[in-house]
Image 1 (cartoon, rainbow, N blue to C red):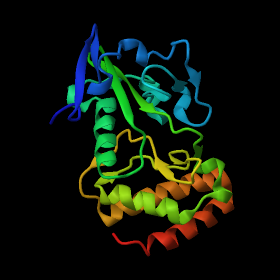
Image 2: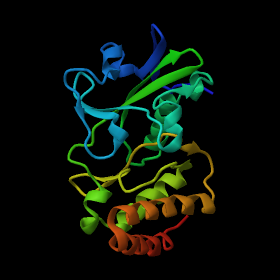
Image 3: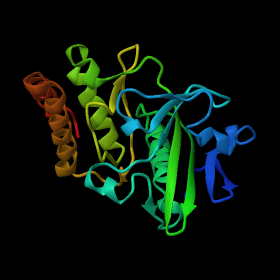
Length: 232
C-alpha cells in the first residue's frame, strides 16, 4: 500500500516525515503543522481542543492534531503505537479524502499530513482546507435539509467509505447550503454493507439526541425516512 496518494510528495523531518501535494511542495515546511504558529486560532466547535484555524501559503486551513478520546486518553492523549508509515492515522485520512474527492463527494481538500516518532509511538497531524463560513449540523438543525444530508451520506457510502464517527459536528453546511463531511480519522475504505451504513446513521442519531434532545430525534426520523427512498 502506498502511504500517500498519487501526486503527493514525502519530505523528511528530524523525527518523522510530512507529505503534501506536489503543487505545494516548494513552499511546505514543518512549521505548517505547528499549533504554536503565530496565525493559529483555536477551533471553538468540536476538535477536542486540538484543532486550529490557520492561514499561509497553503491558503485558509484547519490544522488538527490527533487526540484520543474516552478512556483511552488516559494512556496518553496523543500517542499512537507505531505500525509503519502506511498506518499513520493522518496519512490514512489523507488517502480517504483524496479517494472521496475523486468520487465527487464534498470533503475538505487535504493539504498535508505529518508524524513524529517517539520510540514505539508517534504523534500525528493533518492540514485541510477551510470551508469558509461553514456551520455544523449541530448549530443549525432548524435550517438543515435532511434530504441533502441523507444524499451526502449515501454518496460517501457509494464511494466505498465508512465513517468512524459520523456525528452532528462532522456534517457541515456551507454558505450555499451544500453539505460537507469531515473528520475521516479511522474511516475504512471498501464495500460498505447495509448494516454498516445504518450503523453510521444510528451514530448520528445518538449525537443529535445528545445535542438537541427530542428535536434532534425528530429531525433524524425525517432523515431516516428520506434515507430509505434513496438508491443504494
